[in-house]
Length: 136
Image (tube, rainbow, N blue to C red; front, side, top):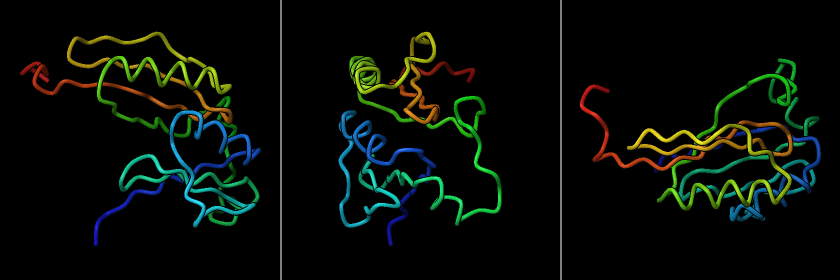
């Protein structure tokens, strides 16, 4: 069996969160989507589960953080080029997200950051592994 990754995030408004990620180019898997949550396909074996807060809470005894003010995780996605990184940020902002930090250009890696509608922190980057310095 192949290993798959499912990232679960609490969201306040499911329909708006689905629309946001669809506008970034990530489709919804209707097989795992209902009024409590949605499965967004990020990659071949990578899935984002958007769960309404009440449903999310059934999986944990911990308090759900306010991701607008508290950092819960840094979620990173690699893309195929610097242009794709810039395009993803443009799509995120157009869909209602926030261009969160100034672009970071390390020569071998280019990185930008957006916050989604619920304040989750997404790092989008392009990395040319052939250019990584030996001293890393």
